[in-house]
Length: 161
Image (cartoon, rainbow, N blue to C red; front, side, top):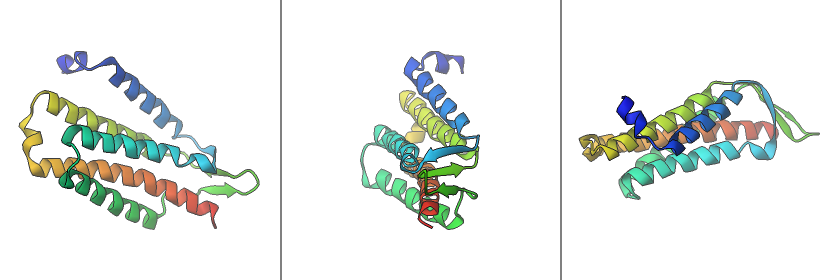
């Protein structure tokens, strides 16, 4: 394990600690401008798509399974209407969002999925030669992104009520 960490580029640790810090801020209730709620989901969608494309290239299988995970999870997340207790202020155009561990867990899930796939790729693991594994990983990336987007859309919907 120590060998894996010592061969990890420094920028990977910078990304990890940045995501960790950002995720930890999401644990506390916060007031945010309505227009900013799309930034984090967009960044995480891009991060997960880059993970798919960098590991498996652009192919019908990889993008298709990412999209399945993404759209199904987005639809389910909107139906579940999470997060609850979001309050919109028309005067300030802000949302008061309850604190949650979910964004941190999702950021870490995307990061570690990307890290493990990168490790498997660098070590020429046969795991990445299996179509079922590739489909699962791509769908997992899509699921994580779909959760981010659904949370954002649920918050945006509160502003339109």
